[in-house]
Image (cartoon, rainbow, N blue to C red; front, side, top):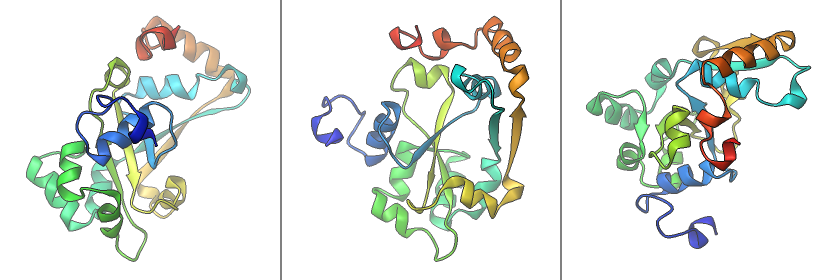
Length: 187
């Protein structure tokens, strides 16, 4: 329905990967999970909810270059040919033009995770250094998958008692809602 009723220019092209990127960007539940290349942006979002200042924050760090080593050969070949570690929507469409094809690339085992840079739909995506992860199995949670691959991630804990100071330092460095959510949303 999103694709059916969205403005015809909402997604650049008719690829399912473009439409999923647009849907995720606008808050619809999808199989995509938001990430950032910037540790500062990650810390901003880990400390953004004032109602959670009594709880430690967490930044998850993934080694997506190492994760690519367990991709199916078809996907790995596309990345190697491009000389990239992350898919674009066009690259992913070359290997898997739809979700059914993508899901069939998974072995009978634990599956895999790909990383996808969305098109630069607006300033938010650009300013947040955004990219997405996508699991091969829609019924698998990323933290469950990562539990089987502890060498591929680490977590940085931001103690609750430091959140105000962290937010203040980020604001001084212009890592704030005005920069990351330009326009009315950032106000």
